[in-house]
Every structure is written in C-alpha cells, then in structure tokens.
Length: 214
Image (cartoon, rainbow, N blue to C red; front, side, top):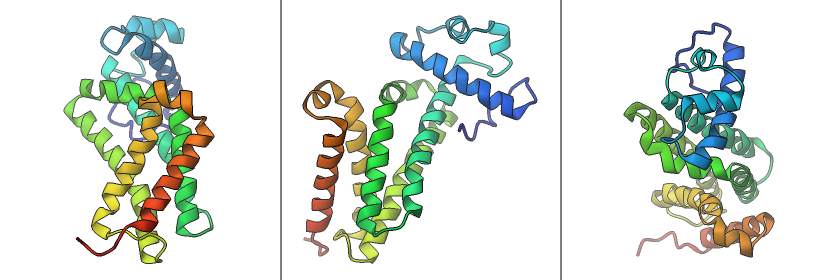
C-alpha cells in the first residue's frame, strides 16, 4: 500500500478512502505518463482516464507533481513489500538471498513500465520529493545488505564488509536491467532463465571473492 503520503494534503477526511482513490489515480496516471511523458500529460487527461472531474481529482491531490510523487512511492512500497518477507523465512543466507533476488526481479518484471518511468521522471520532482525517493532506494538496497552481512558473518559469502553496500546496489541494478535493457534481454531470456542466470552469477561471485585486500 502507499506509504508516507501525509505530505500530500487532501480535502477528504476519510484516510482509507483517500488511499484507495490515490491508488486508482496512480494506475490511471501511469498509463498516460508512459505513453505521453509526464510533462505532456494534463491533469484533465488523468481525470478523464480515472472517470472523475478535475474538481473531484483535486480533492485528493494538489498538483500533477503530487501524482508523480505517489507513483514513485507506490513503486518503492510495492517492491519493499515483496522482498522484505524473504528476511523472515527459514533457511540459510544463500537461500534467503536467492528468494530475495527472485522476488525483486519478479516485481521488476511486473512493474517494468513504472520503473522505467520512475527513472525518467524523478528529475521532475521537487528537491524534497527526490530526497524521499533516494532514501527509499537506499532502504531497498538495505534489505540486500542485511542478507549479505548475515552471509559474511556465518561464512556463507566471501566478501569484505566494505564491499557489502556495493554488491547490494549491483544486485539492484541487475534486477532493474531486466526493465532497462528489455529490448534485447527479453528476446534472449525468459524471466525464469534471467533470474536463474543472474542469481548463479551473483552467488558464484560471492563465493569466489577473496576476503584479503590486494
């Protein structure tokens, strides 16, 4: 569900209704944003797509940027909700990392238009909104960092502690690459094949790293 949306004011007092309507607005807006781009899309078009008047739409948001913020928030919330449960499941560090990678790349596949849009349009957000998005990205990387640290501590992964953050971000980039490079990757791999190949490469690298600095 959408989180941290209290920064966006609403004329509607029913918080549950606001969350439901904003989710619907997000889905309606992204369809148009992906086709036309953020700047060329009008609030009127979003309202028409959603099936409400502009006046009613403005009861839930203040500006078009609010919608973009909600889209970004929805993406990160959805990814986090799918990947975080991996930390609580039984099994060793290797199995936990495999589950997390699988969950992450699977949600990237499901939301690939959203993710491409996010990286294209983050620059259109205000400074404060961009700060939130960057924090959300770091929190996402933090999930992988936690798994990697566990693996280092229990001897599953051979990696220097100073490289944990780098490897976590590398995993995120490999997942996002399924969306960013889909024009070539999705011609050569099924989603299952891509996840298996990338997971094998990551685990092999973690197992072969030398813990001693050069």
